[in-house]
Image (cartoon, rainbow, N blue to C red; front, side, top):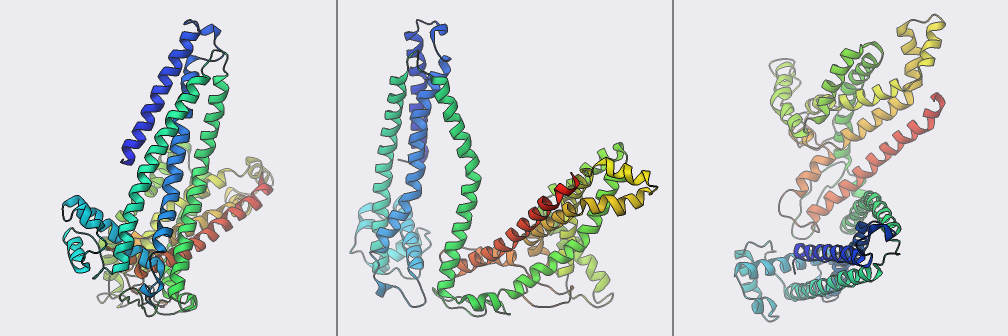
Length: 490
């Protein structure tokens, strides 16, 4: 049964339980609500919650657990002799999943019958040709162990979904019956429903934490899988990035240092542009601008934060790059060879970061107590002296935190770098050279039809994990600085 239909059936059972429970309690009360402990809607909600929530919870847990069970069962079918030295069991399982998806596609499009898809003695060449004709993504030649594992993969998945549908519907019906039997005039339905709503709110608040945990675990597991194929020392300390993958493994020059250098170089140029402009704009808006000017200028400045980064990338590619070539290229100083360079991406990224720095700094400067300004004025200081010697030092921890947050935003930027900085991975101090960053290489490695368990994709997970650790460290440092020193000025 499709998941959508299963979900709708559970909701239909819950809706039926709601209507029946509400009608029952009203009938027991003789249509007099005053004899009820709770409003009728609470009795119906109690039955609906006990019908839907346990069933949907089992559905989610089943969908999370079934892939692990199926993968383990299928993995036992693959002998060690079928795994090449340059491959791994994870890559073979990825081929199994692709082959299983190809069999499903071929059956759905009429390329083969269900019996042919389950035939363990089928001709390998014929199966490979049929899957390719159906548009499936398969390797050049499916091996016999992979085909048998793919067939078992389909059988286990199909049986799992059927059992899951039956279990979920039974739980929904049992929950509806439970809630219906509890429906009596003296039942404290309101208390039960409010406790259930509280549990739902806690679950909703936990989604962000669980999502973060899932992202970290997916990065960690795939990064570990990558380092099983390639040495970590060459990855973190290599000075050349020129990957060349062949078959299931094999590569050369996977050093991340050129990518990290390009990432930090472009980010530094962006911060050199964004920090002075954003900080001066924040000082003007908070200390000098009238309320009328501030009401107009602050929203207009923050419009920059709402512009999609692809638009900034096009602006770098079509406007800023050619303009810099005219000034610093062969017609000018002769320093710049093409429009894609560190300077191009850095300038445009700096413009993008201005509202991040200005908005956060403006809020932090406004949070400085007015009494500190009044005390400075009372001692004879001018407005500019008060800003330099009182306001800025008081707000400095928050401003540093805002700059670090902007830096983490710059490090994680992708589209501006892809369109404005080029694709060359090099260690160079020339800001007019083309360079690339970690995020740009992640995009290039995951572009195309390669499977997420292939070496081409696994290296992207290793890059992503490295970038995640860097940006997480910057965010933690920024929050630490803000929280540690903010209390001194409150």
